[in-house]
Length: 178
Image (cartoon, rainbow, N blue to C red; front, side, top):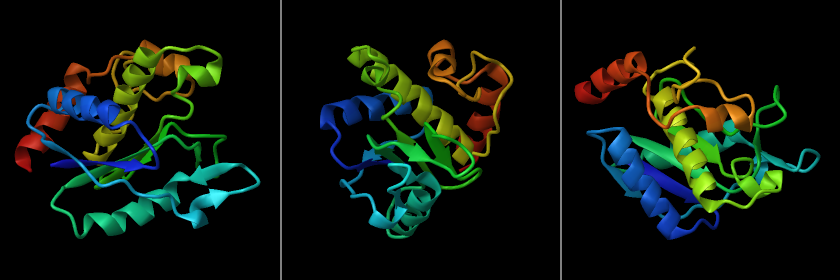
């Protein structure tokens, strides 16, 4: 079972739709909406005005020990980073049990557009991508595969919300084996 952990204020209907979509794409995986969680102050870098995603993953890892879920996907509206990059759409243990995604730069409003459907599509893609990493999948060379590395939002928009045949076979073997 995959727990989806809202970090901060996120619309419950939006998250419910995300859970349904994850179950559809990751056939065989059930999902559960976790209780909302607040970001830890020690993960915030005031100079960057961003949250360190690796520190968030470490904090969430402590939560999974007392949970009935196998994996947790944190979802936040805050901007995330790792020290070597300007920002990240998300990060995950690979393989592992914890991932986090940020809707901050997935939001069309960040780019001067207003399209809630596009925000949902981007969030689904990023969620599936990071969960793919928790199952042990690396980045894929197929630009249409959800596991393709998104260096820019245009990469996210171009790729599909599903795995290519190769990645799909790999992740289904892992899911069926769990």
